[in-house]
Image 1 (tube, rainbow, N blue to C red):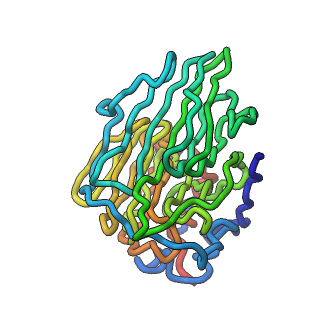
Image 2: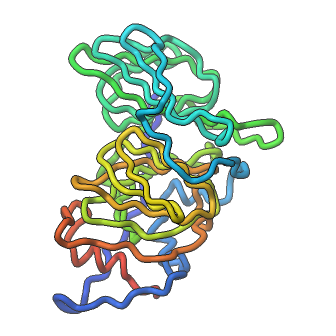
Image 3: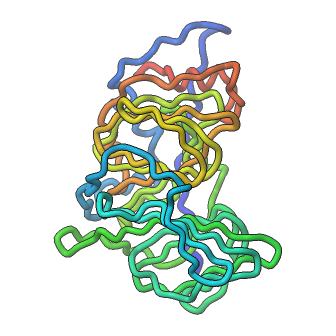
Length: 326
C-alpha cells in the first residue's frame, strides 16, 4: 500500500524592503523562533503533531565533526550492490546511516528490516514491499518499520542510490517505535519553503507516529551562509549533493556529497554553500519540534555576487533573513 503524502501549510510571503536598496532592520537574536508568527512560518501538518508520541532522550556522545564518505566501510551485499556505512558507531547509538548503490539491472537481497528505517530514493526502480511490487521514483521515501520484508531493484537503464536512516538505539527503557505503516511517501517539491535560517526546506518525516527520528530536506543555494544557531537535540547533516563549509563551534570543515556531519545538542552550527549550492537532509533524534530551537546566534548572510537565485529574488530573501519580529 502506498502511503499518501502529507500536506505542508502555506508559508506567507516574506516582507519586502520599503524601497530599493533600503537597509532592513535586523532582528534581535532571540526573535527568530520567539513568536507565534514565526512559529507559524515553520509549521505544517507534520510539525503540528506537537503533543503526541514519546520523545526519546538524545543519545549522541560523539563530539562535533564529519564522517567522510571516503572513510565509510564498504560491504558487497550482493552482485552489483554496495553498502556504504556512513554512520554506524557506539558514540551515536540512536542513528545508523547507510548509502546503498545498486547497479543497473541488479537488486538488493530480499530481507526483513532489523530496525525501523527510512530510505530515500535517488533514481528509478522497483520496490518489493512485503511481497508486493511497485515502482519508485527520485525523491520517494520508503518507510520500513522493524520486521518489514523488502528489496529494491534498479531499472535496466540506470542505477539506484538509496540513503537509509535506521534507529537502532531503541530500548525498553526508552520505547519510541515507528507506528506508521510500511509504504512510500512521494516527494512534493512544490511544498518546499524558504526560512530565515537561510535554507529551503521540504519536510519529509516529522510525526508523532515516528518520534525517534525527524527528517527535513534542506537546500542552501550558492551564495548563502546559514544562520549560526544551536539546537536542544542531536542533529546530523546527510550531504546528498554539492559541497560547502560547516562551522561547528570553533571548527571549519569542508563537506561534500556522501559525508555525514555530527552536531551534538548545544553546538553552534552553520553551513556555507559552495558553488552550485549544497543539498542535505537534517536528521534529528528525536524528531524536531519548534521548541527544540535553542538559540539564534547570528543571522544568515547572502553574498549577492554568488547568490544563484534559487530561493527567489534577492531582496525578498534578504528581507526574510532580516525580518524584525512582530
